[in-house]
Length: 183
Length: 94
Image (tube, rainbow over all chains, first blue to last red; front, side):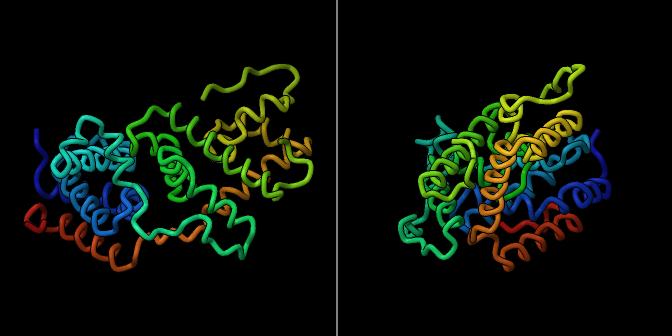
């Protein structure tokens, strides 16, 4: 049974609006173009509004991130039907760095540690960089990250841990890890 | 994540801790396992340094300038969301 308009509006305000900033930040992690990311969030909010009567009230953030992932895939299908058969490739291609993005070699080494981390992060494979962005930059849990990317939690964990391991190896190569730390 | 089996000796080994260290730093472990990891890190210098390194990596990533959300964009989205909550679908453009 469909809920009434008032209940739909109240549910949207209760469950969706508090998550808006997180959803917007995740969109920016997934889609580099700012205007495209904003459009993606608007479409996600619309879909959430229209389907909120089917939401059980549990884990709103994960629910919204799943909607956003599906919305992103559908938007890609309309614009780039050649990518439709491989939505993960679509996610990766559309998240490629914009032209003119800083080359890791151009980063000014003000803070050596941060510079090495930045450079290591930038050269990570896209699938690793996405997971690190969502967990370490956007503060998502493993479960929320899995929902946003449509991946099993085990895959999120292994990609995240491997990505951080690479960053750590670069720090070691730059001589920036604490003395006595395990190699 | 499965909790560790309780044993008479509650001290975790370095191998056990290193396997779950990143999950611990991400706050993804249950309380019992977290406590055992924390006890080990407090007593083991090498594992403690490993934890410190990964913690600093996480902090550096947070400090990273992301060119993240502009205030204007977030303001537009908040207004869009507010209008959806009060006016419904009719508030959506085109």
